[in-house]
Image 1: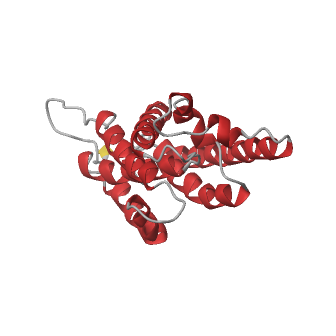
Image 2: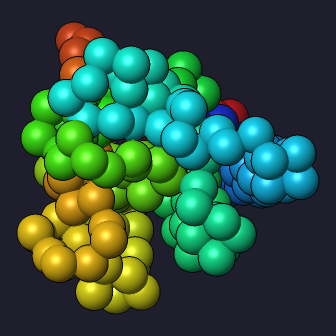
Length: 217
């Protein structure tokens, strides 16, 4: 009889558990986007003006609550469309590594990105959108590939870099109506989250059978 000790490890590339975790993460992220569209539809349909009331208004106390609310708001459906695909793609790979790590990492990204915008943004602006979170997930994948020595995470980062690498210029100051601060601090938040919640390899005495095949009579 032949056993594969790592066949049930959802963090090991190529196992059934890994593909199952990836599938569940994709379904979950696909459910997030309709929720964001629902919020935008309600906002526009009922003319709530949530962008102005719940967005981040830098350097103003009454705009500080937007740190938590702004990732769920967008400047119209075009803005939301542009964020949807990268949010699903990057979120899927981050979530597949564990729901608890995903939730805590997302919270760290929202805080670092939002507070960075609040401290450094223009007080005459209102900032909303999930792009800070998206750049945070990008930072997580890059940093996990390094600190966890995960070729899988690093390969995903390179793949996403090929698809959306041109968007990395969004962390640089521009004249466009884009919050480069949100992108930059979101990326930094992802780096911090990946380090804080990194997966530590267990240390055990004796041989390491994590990648071996064990044969039993």
